[in-house]
Image (cartoon, rainbow, N blue to C red; front, side, top):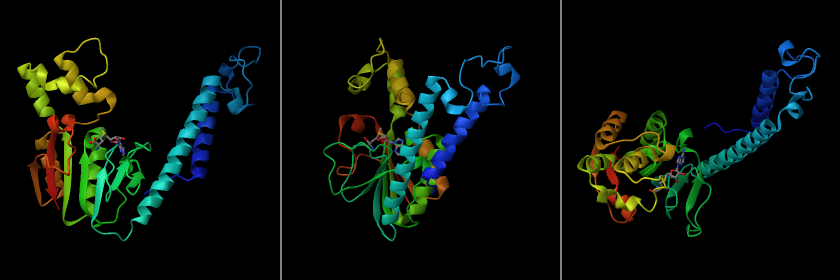
Length: 274
Ligand SMILES: C[S@@+](CC[C@H](N)C(=O)[O-])C[C@H]1O[C@@H](n2cnc3c(N)ncnc32)[C@H](O)[C@@H]1O
């Protein structure tokens, strides 16, 4: 798994600075003719050497970028350490994109580093961007679980991660996936059944209207958070192609799936066995 070192981060930041200097033609002595006026002055009236010469907004953007890359690099180093600590373990239970559903006895993974105050203190949580894969040893997992997560990844990213899950599972291990049941949403839309969507009223942002297509847009796009949507047929065929020995639709399972009205009404469940 690639880990960005701080030196790499600084190199990236230096590269961005150099690129912006070139773009603006502001590097001392190398400014292009058309970046200066006829009196030889910088048309932006900026000092000509580097970052100090950039408009304030660019300086702020670069500083923010540096800070974000640094935070991401630190998180990546931290998550690599957490995964190294799991080396040699067998029968792991993993919860991908756990959000606030952090479970004791599981390896809970999420991009967010902010956990709710009720998070069990003995739970294993790894702050990790799953677009970078699942760096667990082959055959080390007995169960991989994910609820309302894969729709947040681009198709190629999701596919790659599903392959990683297959690799990480031991023979007979189970991959359980819970996803938004948009087939039911489209059915309700076509039937004009507004009541089906009423649980969403509490979380749907103010749009000025509350039409059936507003609910559909929310389910499919979630204001850009959803990148790719699945239905049973698609998920089943993807998992079969990956090589799972059996793939079958499932239903809500107490003690395993989230017992909250939003999840109970709007989910479909699938299980694949390696
Ligand atoms: C809709 S929430 C689902 C949370 C929980 N599993 C549930 O069913 O309520 C989606 C979660 O995926 C996480 N997520 C999105 N992209 C991610 C990524 N690239 N790597 C890891 N987690 C990610 C988000 O931070 C969020 O917690």
